Image 1 (tube, helix red, strand yellow):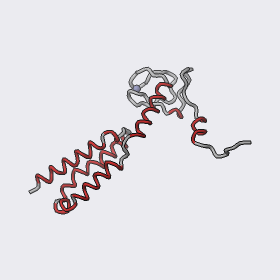
Image 2 (cartoon, rainbow, N blue to C red):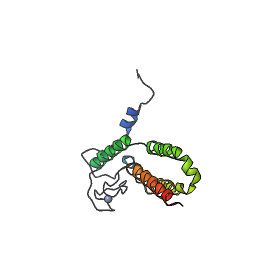
Image 3 (cartoon, rainbow, N blue to C red):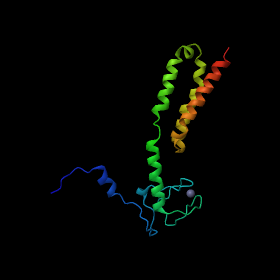
Image 4 (spheres, rainbow, N blue to C red):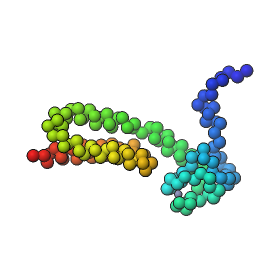
Amino acid sequence: MAQHQRPSKRDVRFRFNIPTINDDGSPIPAEWHLRCLKCEYDLTGLTSRHCPECGSAFKPYEIWVANRRKQADLYFRTPAYVPYGVLAALMLLALPVIRDNPLVLVPFGLLPVYEAAAHWFRWDPSGSRTIMIVLAVIASITVWAMLP
Ligand SMILES: [Zn+2]
């Protein structure tokens, strides 16, 4: 008698077809989501084990492991709401200055552009987000200092 009828997360993961060390050279299935480690090219459907974009040789299993590691790293990175929360708190503190000098908000227009670009070009903004926010704050203070 089955103890659990409801599939758990673990069951779902084991249903997926995953690459093994013994590569038989068959076309890369879409569900592996393999991307070239060098250039991010989508390797789905390839029977060759060379990236058509940058020419580097790859082993499906190694890429799969590397991608999983990358995902694990992402999981431990600072979520977006932390730096933006700090920024919001700073802005709240600076509210009297902002109210008198609304031009100091102009540099922060960069941040949504930056996030949109990261989304559009599919790069991960979490590593550089804090730097961008700090740059926007510095630019904002510079604008404030230059105002008459
Ligand atoms: Zn490549």
